[in-house]
Image (cartoon, rainbow, N blue to C red):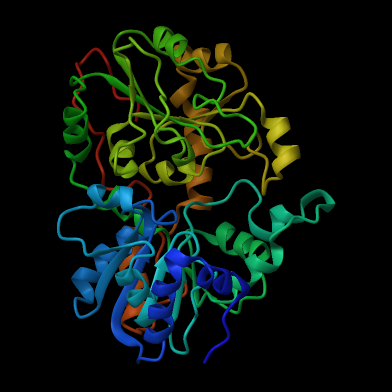
Amino acid sequence: MRSISAKARRVTREPGRALKYALYRAQLRLPVDERLAVYSAYWGAGYSCNPAAIYEKARELAPHIRGVWVVKPDRVAHLPAGVEYVVEESPAYFRAMARAKYFISNANFPDYIVKRPGAVEVQTHHGTPLKLMGMDGLTYGGRRGKGGDELLKRVGRWNYSVAANQHSTQSWGTAYPGGGYESLEYGYPRNDVLVNAAPDHGAKVRAALGIEPGKQVVLYAPTHRGRNRDVSGYLDLAELAGSLGPDSVILVRAHYFYEGKPAAPGGSAQVLDVTGHPRVEDLYLAADVLVTDYSSTMFDYAVLDRPIVIFAPDWEWYRTTRGVYFDIFDAHPGAIAATQDELAAVFASGAVDDEQARQRRAAFRERFCALEDGKAGERVVRRVLLGEQVGDRPAPAPAVPQQATPADRPAQQPALS
């Protein structure tokens, strides 16, 4: 019998789980199911991100491989119709985890799961990194962060690591060293929809959100900072809405750590909380402008070649305490502001999408989005599930994605991009 980790042994001593884990150990004696793939996103939080995009493409190109999603009990109701699932730590879950050939996640599977000979694990990640990740973060500034040994053991299970760009490949190499995994520098599957979406996709999302045609839609998507539990990330949303005027709507998408907390000030029809929206890609397609701080949303939204504003009031604190791979003030994707007044001025002056902002966005897209041609998911499926050889680097993506500006506007209000 294969060795069981210390964490696994603790599981067996918990009365409510011992029987289920015994089932798991029994299932480990059965052959690996060559036609079973397990998917998970954000530690069982639901159906999203790169795993969802790979799953959808696998249903098309590899229908002989059965895909099963791992979800927490309270997330079952959020799954799309027709998606097969197992509830985390249910008997069905342990059976699937014991027998599956493929494991595809944007985080990591539990430490007590045994990596069987012949099994294949794909780490898709969930964003191009700005802040230091993995071992880079744990050792930054001479730290001796806890959890490094456990992290390296998880990395040792990976067969493939998906990268959206060369920057990510290099960052994952130092953040997650020594795993012997193959880097799939293919672009991000979750961004395929940004290239392939129908021209009216964004307009339909706006209509579903109750946004009138002709409105300027600003998506605000801040990251999680650790010290700051305020969803707004230092931004006064009501004040920003007032400075933008009545023809603008702000969509607030809080980091998933804050889901369930109010993200928009009450009483403002111009500010909509869309944190619970199931697909952030839909929100990208609906927006004219992205405002973010240090979130990886900037790298995804840049695929659309639309204006991006970085709001960075605490950059020095963030840079020195978290550690970063590059300075956002040197390599931002358009316009940047350090105060609320500066942010309002970016919009009022037109700097949000002037020639300088466009040049910066073009350089940013060349560095981080060159592989985003709408076929990343297909490349992953062909390489991993079908065993086909795929070129190391696909042809560069088109300079401007096919997706059109999402909504018609009155003639006196020109589009921002």
